[in-house]
Length: 161
Image 1 (cartoon, rainbow, N blue to C red):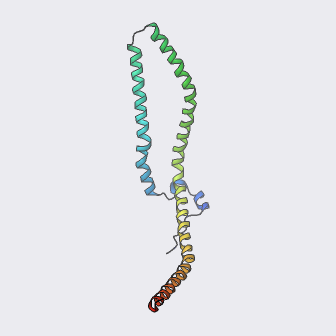
Image 2: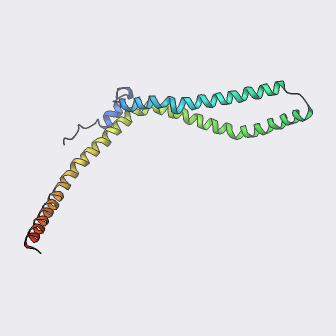
Image 3: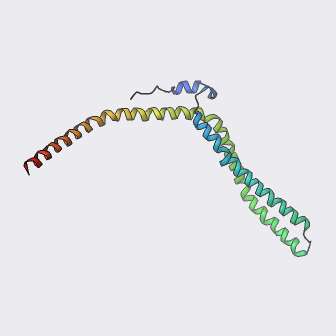
């Protein structure tokens, strides 16, 4: 088994712009395929549901009768929704900022992660290569002992013991 070529050093990586570093094409294709299914589709479905509920609420508010009970119910609902929005709005800002940060990192990190992936593969191959030198003597000794044991058992069966 041959040892693969060494990936670029950390100094070379830091001096090279991200768009010039090697990228893993297979991982990029898988990522592009899954972005639509895992990110855009749930956002579109959620947005459509929110838009539909908003339109239904607006239509119900416009076309309903204006009795005293309904007016006070609507006023109470506004206060409940406002309290919920005070809790949800900061969370929305935090998660929106995190989403923006992830998009930013997805533009920067792939070349560096490819280099890390190369070093990991190199370490795995070197470990396997080194373990072969450790394992081969043990296997040869165990196979010799097993062969000797088999020969002894054959001789014992031959002489009837």
